[in-house]
Length: 327
Image: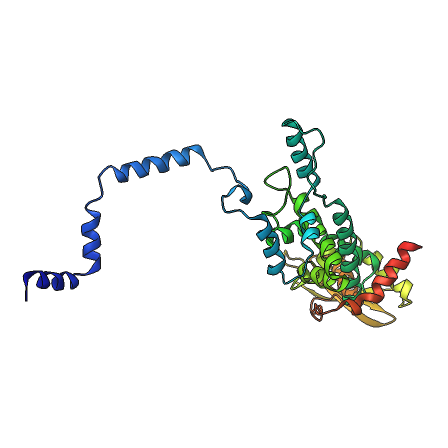
């Protein structure tokens, strides 16, 4: 056996960490201080400005548009979906650039999404309202409007839009995009889906991404009731349930800092609800809120909302809303 073969076998038995340590000794002494200085300068300059994805060399807009629909498992018309992401500010910016280089009548061949935004806003409001009316049939119109307003607010829609990945595909003059642009884009996507695949797919899209935000939440938080006892009296009078009568049914810790009153409310000698408070007025107010939750079907232990509702299940409430709008 030759000396070379023996040496190669011995090298094979040496642990890898020893070889790597030997290799690290060959790094020049100036590398560490240089890297630390570069890091210090980068921190001193502050964070880098956020750049759009389109500034990257591997950007492919058509591929991004195609992938967006596939991620959502939806069938979009490519031209309509691209229109949904194109804001008027982008078209105006590109037209101005062409004018600056001498083109008198610039033509981009692009349509902005204003029409789709209006269509999407109307569809979202109709779908969400019909869904809430179907899921919470005993809730008054004021409560329905409060929930719909909360779910379709700019902040909520912008949050959904951002998590769907629209931020990097939006064509707009400003960057980073604002919540207003994100919300408008989401509305435009709903409008594009309705034009591409019909009302059924558009409703399911809104149900899955907007209405499901009610999951594991107290729906009563969306509706702020200023005078619960007055509202309870109006509701009982309208439904002919009798005049609500608050009665003290419990008291602990009297004349102490930890006093707790319990008040029950009765209608036609029937117990409706109760509440606790540090004084009698607070207890009456909480009892009235508990009664309203019981009457509206939004009690704390209410049955979970059915997020499997289909368009056919809410069609009746959508038709009712359309009739009111026409009248």
